[in-house]
Amino acid sequence: MSHPPYVIDTMISAKSIAARIEELAGEIEKEFAGTDKLVVVGLLRGSFVFIADLVRELNLPVEVDFLEASSYGDGMESSREVRILKDLRGQIEGRDVLVVEDIVDTGHTLAHVTKYLQSRKPARMRSIALLDKPARREVDFKAYWTGFEIPDEFVVGYGIDYAQRNRNLPFIGKVRFTDAAE
Ligand code: IMP
Ligand code: MG
Image (cartoon, rainbow, N blue to C red; front, side, top):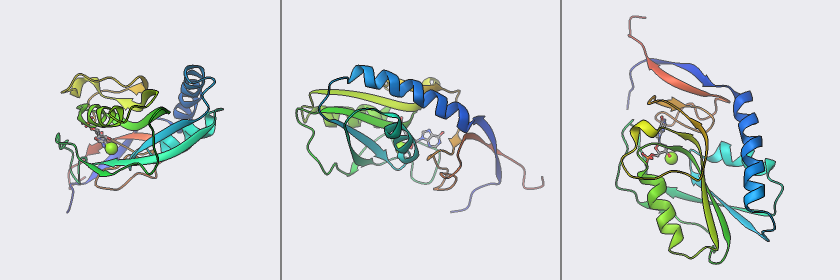
């Protein structure tokens, strides 16, 4: 698939992300203080950088697991119908669970995934999204913790892709399309 030419403008620096993650980790530690085991569930693939940085700031006994839900594919439009493509490896019944997502956009993905995981009867489940685009919401869902609220822009970096590219950028940037002539 080919995509029109674009540039990436920095929206949130690596430094700001790191500072915010430190704050969030403090809140998560408070919420789950005394847990014998927190299962941190990352939604593949977009959350892989966020979860890696987040768990290293958490001073709690944690296990890490992953789940993959269907998403945008190669475009910029949400699929709306969410399917579980890869399930957890471990059990979460009776456990404390933290679901980690990159972005809440229309809300379909996290609403579906948290409902799906809730049916397995975790002791306590919370969700965290690095980014939230409230202007795009289609279902009534809010992550328990949010890193940054952002405007309705298509973003990449820090694990987040456009057509599978740019996940390796250390910051969050917005995609700006340019004329081929530029
Ligand atoms: P939702 O189901 O519409 O809330 O979509 C959530 C998923 O869409 C996220 O996990 C991302 O994978 C993807 N997504 C939403 N907004 C963006 C964006 O600005 N850039 C890249 N992926 C995005
Ligand atoms: Mg995703």
